[in-house]
Image (cartoon, helix red, strand yellow):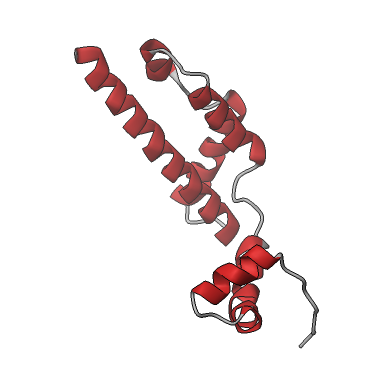
Length: 121
């Protein structure tokens, strides 16, 4: 196992001490898991997340929310993944990608449902 020396700001060491934790012990126990967790690349390309975040941040009108759709490139990728899924041909990475698209779709549906309620008022 590799050994490293790490300096942390005093205020972080103080926070750990206030919680009754030794900074060295905390780092030894938690750092490997944190590094492993954060070493995984995003499931989808950054531009997909950026597209959705930019849309939400643009303060869209109710009509724009109702009309919101994935880009043609995203739609093409989704069709590809859904086709492979239909025939049981997804790789584990593709399955994770499809699941991430499903999570995003759920968020967008919730946004649209909220929009419908707003339009009815």
